Image (cartoon, rainbow, N blue to C red; front, side):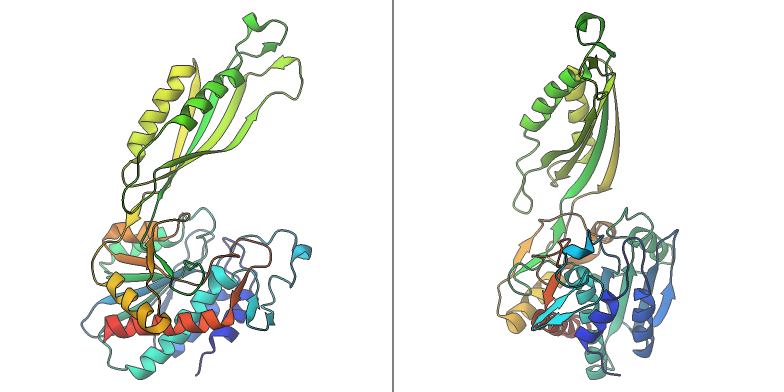
Length: 377
């Protein structure tokens, strides 16, 4: 068997795996992994497909490649230059939903593993794959459930490389070594509905809402630190009013999000927010959902190995970053595992006409192979 990174990426792109659907992506990957001598286990939880595969060769560390087969919706397909699920190649560009985020990375991981295993049949340790289909969705039955299952079996991972599209201009110029935490809040401010001509007999929650928003948006939550920018607060949705221009509404709903650094905690953000809301509102309800805490990989073995490989393969001095949204690293790093996110350029992810350079995917495959050489030989 000889795995061609681009052909495999095309096969994965052709599967309509809009989250949490996997299509047949994991079956395609499982077939390849089994031919490479991996023991493959499918771990479905709820509607989510998960795959865990290992190939062990005696004592040594466990290096896990992690990623997701699901993709975000395409939006109107007639807005795309090429059909989003055909994997069209035009010049040096591979087009399609998931080309960069992150089916291209998955293909590069598999082709790299084939070359590594052919050249190092006596490697030391364990090579593993952890693949899910709900990273782009609610992320409740995917990687987090698989990690719980592995913990229950006493399975330990030392290093994890996640194929998220981290790069900016060239492969490896940016590597993510952590992510900010994400905390979502839903606030319902209760008023008293009434006629706008008789405000003394009503209480307008939209007016209270204005004071709350002003206070929350002007608050400095923390200053960040050398690894993380300052915590940010953003409102995503506001709903209020009856649709009539002569009615004071009975309530207003606000949805908001914190992207927070390690200088703040879920508990501190909740307490400070509720104090501010309580200062301006007579009656309210607030609920919270933590999407994930901040995480950071410092020191250790994985980051220096990745930096050295990128110097040699790509001639870049990589930037270690914690920017961007959330990723499944939030479920892996807190288990004491060294985690980096390294993938292709992210300029078109989640956009119409998502695409990736063919050259960059082949480069990424070489980088993944050399990381295995550093850590498992």
